[in-house]
Amino acid sequence: MPAIVDYECPSENMFRNACINRLHLPAMLATIASMNNTPRKTLDAIFSSPTPRNLEWARMESLFVALGCIVIEGNGSRVRFELGGVVGTFHRPHPVKEAKPYQVRDAKLFLTEAGVKP
Picture (cartoon, one colour):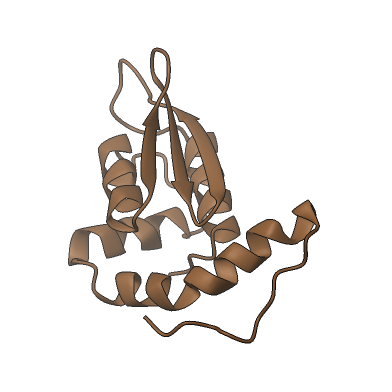
């Protein structure tokens, strides 16, 4: 992974995520390029329009793990994913296995903030 040596992050908190994302961008691009077909299709589905209503939660969770997210289990069905300093908080859907459209939109926002694009 090529390192960015001459870039200094500002000390303000509002620029923290932008700095972290910029430092992790080469690794993120390499991860996306080396993904199998299933996570790549899931990524395309998340960023598709209109928002899919039949996307399985397990596929979304597998995509997050394939991208290198740290999984933080919470109480009950709550789960958090951390990627490049950006934290996304979700509730696993139950009793159905499909993610609801608002969860897919939240996943899209989380991935966008983390610097992931299809």
